[in-house]
Each structure stands twice: as C-alpha cells, then as structure tokens.
Length: 218
Image (cartoon, rainbow, N blue to C red; front, top):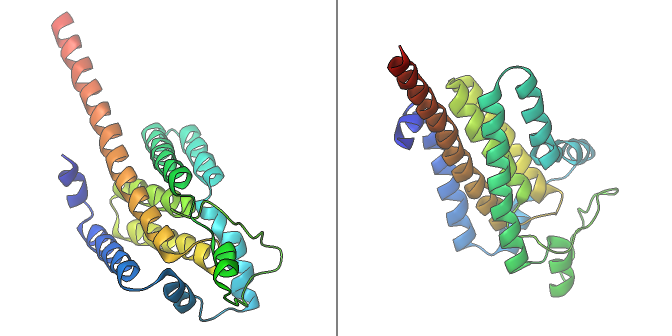
C-alpha cells in the first residue's frame, strides 16, 4: 500500500502536504499578480546569479543525468523510479501546457500594462505555456522518490528544501506565477509517490514470483 511508504517519512509528508495546502489556498485567495509581486519583493545581484544557475536543478536534463549516474552506481530501482517519475509528471505537464497555453509573466505584464523592474539580464523572456511549471514538477518528483528511498529525516528535509528553491527560482526569474509552481509541485509529488510505489511493488511481485518458481522447480 502507498500508505506504508508514506508512514516511513511521516514528518516529511506532513510538511509537504501543509506547504501544498498553504500554497494552493494562497492561489485561490489572491491573484497571480499579487502573489507574484509579494514573492518578488527583494532582488540583489547575488540572488540573481544564484537562481539563474540553481533553476537547472529542476531541469529535465538534471533528472536524466541523475538517473544515469544512479544506474551506474548500481541503484537501478532508484534510477528507474526517478526516470519514470520525471516522464510521467512531464507528460501531464506538457498536456496541460498545450491545452491551456497560459501567458508567462513577461507577456502577461505587457498585456495588462504592468511595469516590472526585476527582469534579469541574460535570462530569456519566455511568453507562452506558463501553466503548470515543468521544473517544479520535476523537482518535486525527484524529491519524493529520493526521500522515500532513503527514509532519513535529514535527506528528506534536504530534498524538500532543494525542491522548494528550484520551484521558487521559477518565480524569481519571472518565468512562472505561483499557481504554475504549486500545481507543478502537486503533479510532481503525486507522480513521484505513485511511481515509487509502482516500481517497488513491481520489484516485490517479481521477487515473489521468482522465489515461488524456484520452489516449484526444486
């Protein structure tokens, strides 16, 4: 059962669910413009540089490279779970992007005549397919799978912080609004949880069937 996997990291999932509820509730109660400006109250050269590079933590290439490295380190089930979590969350995100095609912050600001002064030099201004955030989905999918695999409080806290920073970077760089990020995080979290359960359950079934077969052959 999925519940058994969740029980191994109770505090992690309590914090995760709480953050998702708070974030999604904020999306309902405030406009995406207000939440965007609230979360972008401070910019400085250091943070501009930091988030310009850190945002790649949620990139698909990072997920693929991590899966490849883990595969060669003999962590094959973990590598498979990460890869499937990335692919499943990515497919859902891309379908929603195509169906909804919401404007990115830069285009939205032009449409409503809003003056935004924190665009970062060297960061490309994207215009379409804002909802939901693919980077947030990938970051949280990886976060869930790794936290469940290691079942360690320190690892789970680190994973959650890494995913949160990757998601926030999308708002800081003016590539996404809060609803984009929160729905992306929700998609990634669900995909990561279901994928982890599927991979380990399938591996368990295979082991049981193989053991039973060997027993019959003896």
